[in-house]
Length: 181
Image (cartoon, rainbow, N blue to C red; front, side, top):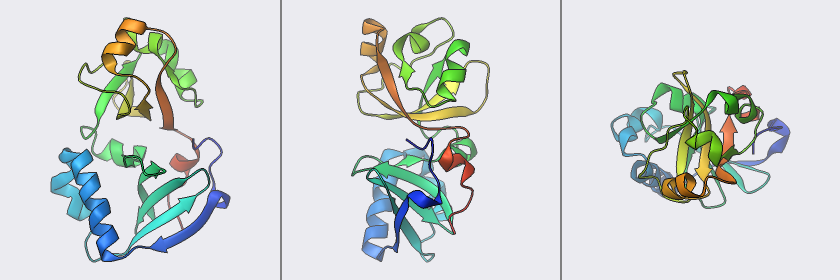
């Protein structure tokens, strides 16, 4: 998704109205209840919230020139990895084994065997079409954020094909974009 992402991919930047800002805050609070106590610090009510529209129906939520969340079309908002590293417990987690790490870091989707092998860990409650953090075996921080293609139970039972779509990973274009000027 963000493999070759750069400033050239930005089509428009719009400061949103207060009503739209409330709607975005509400949907983020519903999706990530763990962020509720710090949501006022992340997205202050008085500071301008900018929605950056990019190619491929991608929207970035930017506060003080820092991208915090993104979504595709009208899908759920997902935090950037920098924000996820600050608040690691806001998303459901899957863990890939050591063999999958280099592929995930080059932008590959997460395959079912990488999640079900001895080094992999699945959260059984995760349903299809859910944003998840992808952790690495033996590492502390998330290495990617993905969108499940099938439920955790199906990943375990089927054990073939793509389990999670890789949306955003360490060292991709969004990770390298510290600020959006």
